[in-house]
Amino acid sequence: MSTRWLRVADVAAVPRDGVVPVDLDGRPAILYRAGDRWFCAQRRCPHADFDLAEGFVSRGYLVCPLHLWRFAVDTGIHELSPGVCLAMYAVRIEGQDVWVDPTPRRNCTPFDQYAQLEADLEDTRVGKAVPGSEPDPADPDLDPAPGPDPDPARDPDPEGRNRP
Ligand code: FES
Image 1 (spheres, rainbow, N blue to C red):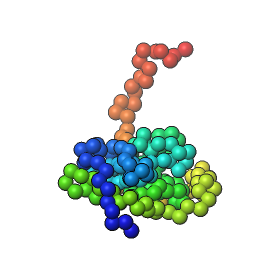
Image 2: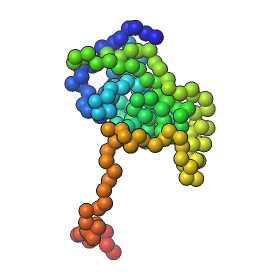
Image 3: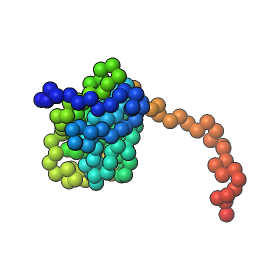
Image 4: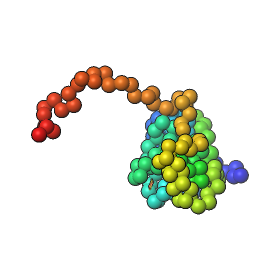
């Protein structure tokens, strides 16, 4: 394990639930926050190499905006396929400084990632739960479930633009 930490950003440079690109001695990475928790991960999406610095944090996941693959914020593991994960880096906050250990850690053992993903997607299509794919309802970063429509009788097209 590396003992060489890199100062990568000011705390103020990363908004709550924000994602910013950082450089780990020439290795592209992203720094992001899920509420008050800080994480650092590889910058390229393992699906089709999209730039995860353009991603966002939602409901306990880092989301790639290109095809909406979702990775657990803390482990980097894909929501449906535990064999697909991001390389993660340890983060330390000291005062106003954000430090990252540039030694990558993977929280999964990739094998045939796409075959596994297809198998997991097939499980969800036939209605089977995929272990570990459900967000923790106790996670403070989860948004509350949407409530009922406050006015179900509301006309969704009051000006009649979409009526024949
Ligand atoms: S490139 Fe990220 S989900 Fe496809």
